[in-house]
Image (spheres, rainbow, N blue to C red):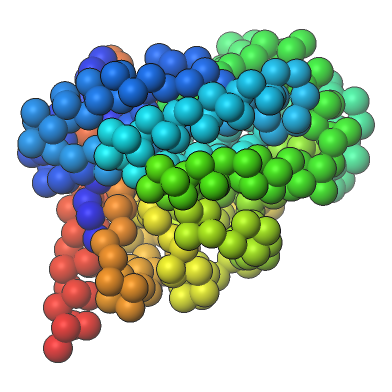
Length: 388
């Protein structure tokens, strides 16, 4: 597998030099300053690629060329934005960057309620606490009809959580949920998010899925011509938030997507932490089923709780079978004669970085360095055993 690292561009406090010292050979990044829906210019892609290559690294994966909500809803300026997306695919292909990760989550991108959840060893992790999310949805944002989306037991817990929250804690919860997290596609205020949410609730799951397939049927032929492979990232978390439709959360969702547009340019990102936040997703089975269409891998782990809450564990110690997953991925590489880019996704915030400014939630240097080292050890051991 190709060891890669998420880099947030020239302003990232974690430099390309540090990434190279971590042992990664590839970079996963985006043109973060290009507005969602606008086209990526070839010269800008080439310029960013040159910076990466001058540091002795390769730009292996684009994460992401974001998909605008107008495209997801097929309203507003969506037709122009799809043409811009085609232009971007042509230009990244011409520049030689040929793997593009994207997602189709409406309104909110990856979502957590607590960005500093302290673990027993005094490190900090990302957490999704379902009762806190319900407290925000039902009692703070006051979304119409929200109560119907939660069981009575969770609503009672949410009300209890709300009653002990200070105003500062409520504001922080809102910021964590709707203000945008690293790599996301933007942020909202309370009024704008409520209106946008309702429009997608009205669209429904079938409507959103049909719009995804329509988008792919337009852009995949362009990706084929450009030599680019698209790999959709699953919903994170892989279940409905705010009553919104989710269409890339399960094995069946992935199968439907691949069947709808049966092209080698239409593929998947295997995000172990996202798919693995659902106990009914068998990650090893998914790799065995979809191996020839998995073009990018996020290796991270989670501890799941009964009510749907979860937090991000160390890479090898969560509820997902990371060793089994790596075994399956390496078999896939052998069977299909390929090398799949992987990156350690999210890392704990260790003591030495806890007082530093500018560290993006989930993207500390030491936490990901630790994760990459652990994963590299497993990959090396499994590769050795499989080769005997």
